[in-house]
Length: 290
Image 1 (tube, one colour):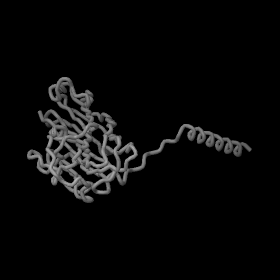
Image 2 (cartoon, one colour):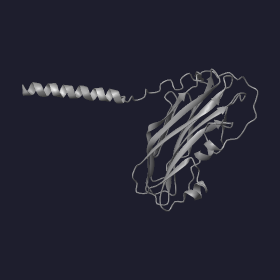
Image 3 (cartoon, helix red, strand yellow):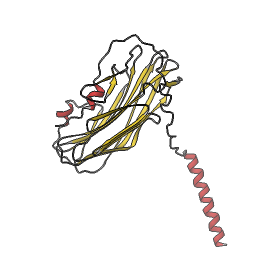
């Protein structure tokens, strides 16, 4: 049974003793990194955006908007991973809150298999680490991660849809992880998935942080059955409350182009709109009957 390796890579992290290095923010654009992967082949690029595509799978990251995308579809158990790193400093000590909204669909026709999506947010205190903030994992060519332990407040969620013959506890352990939701489905229909991952970090003004965002999807079971995930409508990360602090990124572009929220009219506004429309209809009616 194939196991989706990215789960282990993004959640099993090693501690590293600090190496003397300047604690100031790295030069602009120098250390923002993107890792995307499809079908266990990873691509590492610099900057604030990147993408990968392959047979039945695609992944992309745009740190300027905070958006990550993964899409898979096929009978060969495709996988897709989108991971973005950015380095941050904060102007004052603060409690910083965040939200990571993940929405899309999963589908599974394998009675003995499953398909899942996972979103992860990790913040690392890398003060004093360096000069190489990233390390390469030998089993994942082209993949790098922060060689440190994420601070408290890092979090993640996952959703798995599975067939009748698939045992979640055999793969994920007993008891099942609390951050994972399990939904039985094997008719191939698109199962809506919406995960709102929220949390907060305590940050200090004189520290350097690395933020890692990850969105991944993959299949379990055996090839030959249609399975897939469609998260092309993006997962979007944002800071919901900076606690009075200002944030500066190494690239200068992080969250610089976040789409404005879709505004919903207040109830009073809707009431006034309804009254106005009713008045217009009455005027037209009277003119026609005159």
